[in-house]
Amino acid sequence: MIQIRDSYFKAPDGNRYFRRNAPAVAVGSYGEKKEPPTQANYLAVDGNIKYDLLDGKIRKLSPVEVDWAREREIDVGVDIKYYFVAGGKADFSHKKAVEAHLKLVRFHIEASTLETLLNKEANKVRQELKEEGNDARVCTSAWVVMDGELAEKFDTALTLGASGTTPQGLTITASGGGAWKGSEKITLSPGTVFAYGLHKVKKWDGDKVEDLEDDWQSLG
Image (cartoon, rainbow, N blue to C red; front, side, top):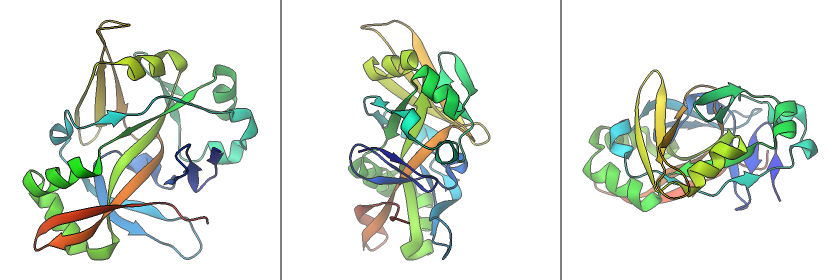
């Protein structure tokens, strides 16, 4: 069952994704996982894997239907200001989510793909993770809100591309070719990420990553 709280989003996969500090996070963001004693855990972003290194490595899941009317407005609206429509973004609100039957879509990078990327291409990021130690985390998934038409296009897209610049954020471009033609793009800029998932290095082999492990928001 889906649950939306100010500190987490429990998705259909049963996992609790982080919500605090979501405006600063995108797929490929990395830094220290903070665990304040009286507040929700979150990723303090130190930087991002170069966006061009993510090209061809971003994956998507099918859109998730949400009964927004069942969720509390005070929980839904935490840290998210926009949802995606064809050609751009629009102001998000709990009321709009209910009226427009907005959907949630997850974009992610597979752990095995990230491991190879860190070991072969993102050397600086790997070194910073090693120096950070046990609290180091990488964002491997991001949930965003979309209107139904755009969500359907991304769901049926033939390919996904990744690009972007540091101030604007990670841009994901979907290209059609079957059910629709042309392309659509979204940019994971501040205020657009609804929730996010993290991975940590479980085991090192010297200076190389040997194993990654997922890390989820606690019940608090």
